[in-house]
Length: 147
Image 1 (cartoon, rainbow, N blue to C red):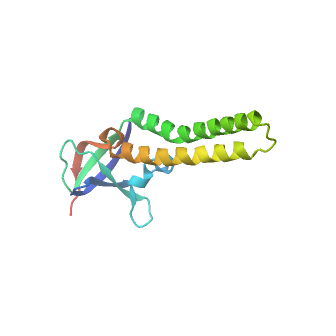
Image 2: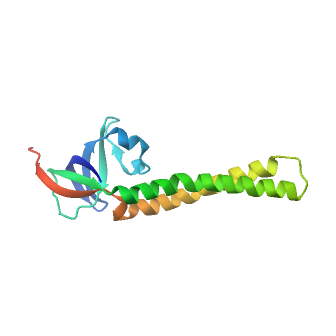
Image 3: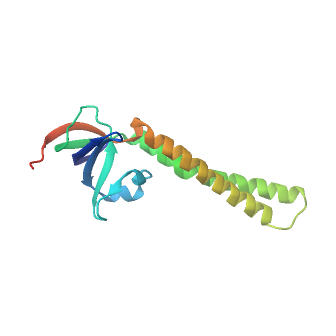
C-alpha cells in the first residue's frame, strides 16, 4: 500500500482535491493524467475518495491499494502489445496462406491491431479511473494547516 501526505484544498462536485508533492513514482503512473500540476512544479492536485469527510485545510494521509493499481497497469500496458503480436501472427498466416512474399499484410495487421488495442485501453483506463478502488483515499487527518 502506497501512502502520501497532502492538504485538502477544495471539495466540489468532482470530489475532494488534495495538494501533495509529486514523487518519482508519479512519472510511471498510468493515472497521472488525472492529476493536475500546479504551475509546472512538483506540487499536484489529485481527486481522492474522502470516506472520513476531511475538510478543506486538513493535512491528511492518502493511501492507494497497490494490488488493483498493478493489475490495471499490467492490463493497460500489456493488452496493446499482445494485440500487436497477435496481429503480426495473423498477418503472417495470411501471407503464407495466399503465397505472398510481402511483409505488408503482417505489418498492416500488427500496427492496426496495436492501434485498436491502444484505443480500447484508453476507453478502459477512463472507466477504471472513475472507480473508487483505483483512486487514492484519505486514510486519516493528521492536522490542520493554519491560514
